[in-house]
Image 1 (spheres, rainbow, N blue to C red):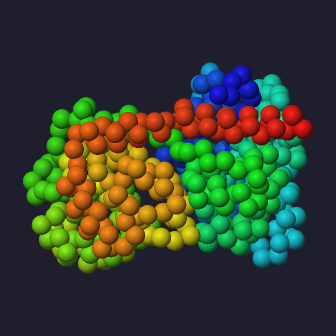
Image 2 (image 1 turned 120 degrees about the vertical axis):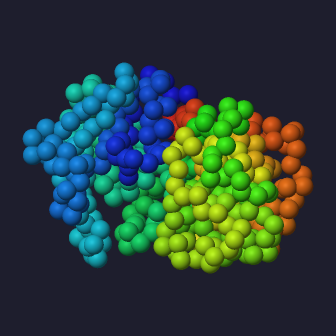
Image 3 (image 1 turned 135 degrees about the horizontal axis):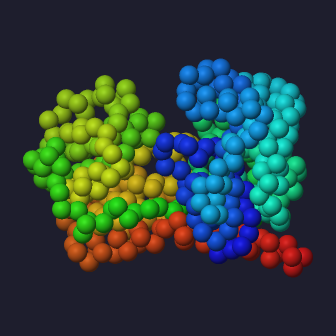
Length: 402
């Protein structure tokens, strides 16, 4: 495990993000044995204009106008930096040459802010851990000269419209010049291997402490009287990621099953046939601490993921939550799901989903349930950072030996 080091963490999510963040969890784990500076990405000019009424943007504008970055101590070993600079918005630029030129200017501004902070903190011989910030941090290795530069990939961002224009080219170059690349799925690790032989699958951390069936005694009122068996899904109901046709097929072909969906819906789900099927129950969005109580009432959990370049490599954190509760789980077969193959049922078609759910209902027992729980609880943030540390050690030892 990395210990007694100085680590700079940059990425595509600021510390004050409202949703869960791999990068924040990793930074907190790093900080248990190291000094860590977590850097918020700088404000860009278009965001400053379009989101000027946002409280977060207002705060960043105040910091920029003051001319002095804000360095906040989160814990004894962890600091958060709000850079006092504005970057030019450049993703709309079509020319690679012009994009590269302005991006270098942006990187200089960003690096200058980080350098002021690490000088104030007295950081030395530091590592940089970059959570997929392929543009704004592209030149940080040259400008800040870290002892080791780690690029972390956890989503296939270059398949998303925003990143695609310049990301296909820039991320490949970014991975190539990093000392190593670490990935939270086997699929993404394989992609990274094309650009950097020092690319490693390091797994995924997950806090499943809330998902302990033995600690849950209450049954939510809106699920209490739903007929068994309950086939359930928890998470955002987004057509980009979930296959509505699979859900409709399950509900229509097994009317004796109750299909329960917990989470906010996009327009595609709101307008789907699912709302007209009597055995489908939409229970809406719930608070995070409420989810285990709903999950406990499921007889089988599902993750009918759409297969696309955006989703195929994603590590499905919800599977850890399902398994931590000991629930039999049916999911779409992907390369990223291979690490769960011994503990889940993997489906390749909508017909497979029916067969797998039936099998899951028939085979479930206490012994299998305990095996699932044990497996899921191995996927801690501590173990995730341990794997990252091993990857760093492997590369640095190899370079030292040379």
